[in-house]
Length: 170
Image 1 (cartoon, one colour):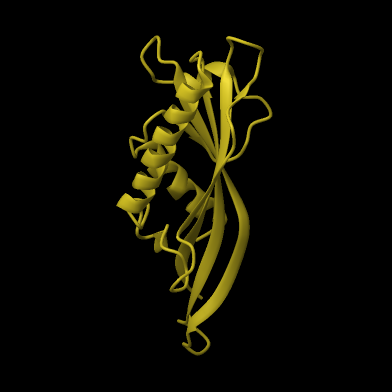
Image 2 (image 1 turned 60 degrees about the vertical axis):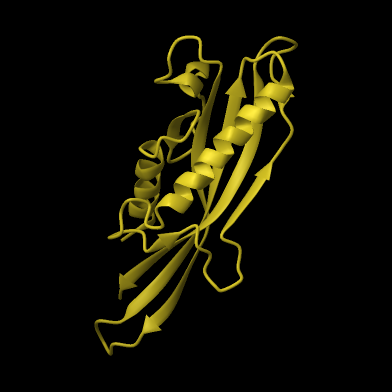
């Protein structure tokens, strides 16, 4: 397997997981993201939407099975950041904050719902931590902020940190 394969499996799973307000998952941040991508696939008049960009912070490997010259196994742990940009045209930032929490709750529920991210041949587990007592999911979320003056778009940035584990024969 490879980073590309794991990243693709995570993106594919999240896009099909029916996460509330999630418009799209991008494997890498774009130089420019058109405003309407935040509301892609939504009915006209929908005021809130989110884009998730995937970022691999770290990759580590550990041998778990000795197999001589061939046939051993390795655990590869990826630390993923799901960088979430939530935007809304609702007038009150309190409403935007509440919608962002609905989005985050739905995102975390989707991660908890399938520990293999819909692809057990690629993802051994995610959202399960790596050691007993280690964090399964870490969420950091910031205050809503207005982007274009009063009455315009309000954005909330959140980052969900999750370990993704793959088992390789190596």
